[in-house]
Length: 281
Image (cartoon, rainbow, N blue to C red):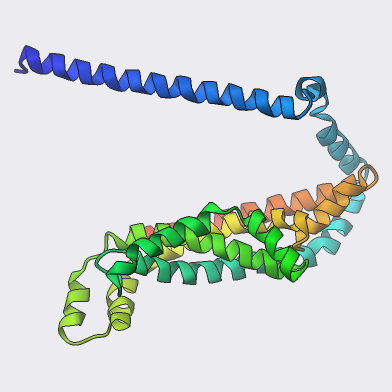
């Protein structure tokens, strides 16, 4: 039986948690309202005046796409090379980012790092890489390297390396160190211990995270096309810039992007399930 003093302590603890939760919610709502009012003021107070026009663009897009439905297959066929370029950008960036993220994760995991003193540095590198949005890095690289897919690939790869380094290091924390210690006892080098003792344990989770990141990078590659990085995003920007008369082309690109993301999501979901849970009997 719980003593009255214990009941009172539990009740007070529960009350404090609810109080803290209520205060945090109030602060969040206050910041949300304040930020919205600031943004509306910076926008010359035009949000409420233009709110009734929010549905105009989707209505025009859908209307023109229905009116010119016969043109959609042709637009899709012409946009296929740009879509392939976007997919290539995402695949290359994901591969480069995951490889770099693997090295960062091993360097950032205590007990596995080759140089333990370097662990905080590796963790801060991961933080820096994922803290800077891809579009900011891409804009800087486009200024240096010029327009094209290369700046986008580098920008996405840097962000992916930071994100994967963080995720992979958390996976590494759950590694069974007995195989690593056994390899060390027979004189294996650090690289041999990682390759033979660690990677086999974490590979399914690494691949699962990499597939999930690929979905994100496909969307990022399309977005970066708007700033001159090429791919399907560049074609979509051009179609939307011309406005009415080209909305059927924009609708075709939207449909292609939607279908591509859905297919990649379904395929990667199946693969992630098999990697983490094994194939269904």
